[in-house]
Length: 247
Ligand SMILES: C[S@@+](CC[C@H](N)C(=O)[O-])C[C@H]1O[C@@H](n2cnc3c(N)ncnc32)[C@H](O)[C@@H]1O
Image 1 (cartoon, helix red, strand yellow):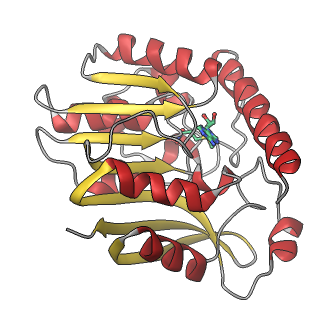
Image 2: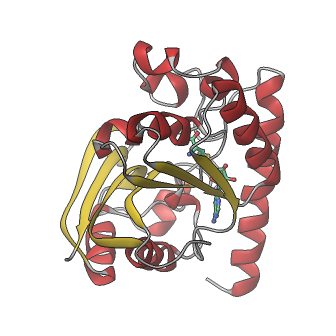
């Protein structure tokens, strides 16, 4: 992809999610699927988890999975959420890791960062930090994180190899990934993926399962698994991605 195309796509993504952040307060639905559908958004969280959240944080959920359920977080851990949006997974993670742990969210969209900060205040959570940045160049030190989570964001990146490399850089050896994302079946070409949905809608830019596995292994991960959980379009799936950084 040319630099101009990548810059234009990133700008489209940013504008789309700025609009989504503004729409939360007026009751709009998400871009990464319809947040009212069973496959996207707040319905992916248990009633118990939703009870831990301010209404606006739950309504702001634009994800396609529940990475906090995947990652099995432990007390005292440092968690990083890539593309943290309205902050739902950061707030839930902060509660799981407790006061001795910390949860970071990174997002490139100012409106989302403001919404997440407001949601964390409303939730009464203080062990969270929302950082402005791009997931292709994470503003955190090397080997400073125990767990990287992400919910329906990596498919939006125009440089996925950089994202996978950044995840490996910030994780401590033995650190782990718990990611929800949209993933294509291996036989679908990039053109066929684009026919099934837009880049901003989390479909056109999706990696295939084999691309995900190869990319994570090349970045220094082992025990890689990509498990399809539900089909969002023909040959395109909500998926759970797990891996461990080689020790
Ligand atoms: C589909 S929403 C998901 C938000 C959140 N993870 C959730 O589950 O509700 C995508 C989010 O990722 C952010 N994002 C997309 N591409 C990004 C990038 N390259 N760097 C940083 N943030 C990005 C957007 O601003 C938006 O907040």
